[in-house]
Length: 234
Image (tube, rainbow, N blue to C red):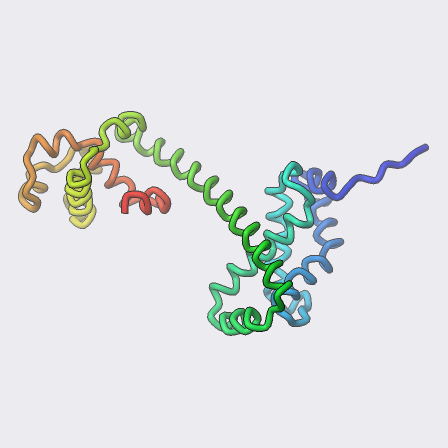
């Protein structure tokens, strides 16, 4: 009888759906996780004492969940995700900033070259994650627009071509969001408060009516959790 030993990549695929297999992998690769983080910190770490190792295990699990076997070896991918999460952790903790700076000063030329390659991989991973989040955000935005009776294609067609008009509609949207009573009125009636707008902003009624879809779409972005879309309009 022949016994077939599964590759790590196959075990990772199984671990995505099998919690017991996932726990086994994390336990087996604790030394790998610790080694990866210690190369960043330059100091010995202990499980149960150092937060970085907990971050590392969580990052290892994240790597398992998001791994695509077509993208290469799992450990290379896991190392990239662990390093990325550690960098995020250090950036959020002021006390580590000096350590990161000093570490950068004493890197050798080879280490700098490796770091550049690693940073490029991390940047690519971050871009991929941002693209996923951006798609999800657009999907949620489309759902919200439909609640207002607006189709996404309608919004595209209604978007003004002139930058000056875009800025004017943006000013109208910002006014609505600033004034809680005006905003409440819009949300409850789904109609633009034209009278209040004209009392505060010099704009013709017909221009407001023509920009209804675009203005409401801007208001939805400004009051909602739409990080990427907000960056676009700002």
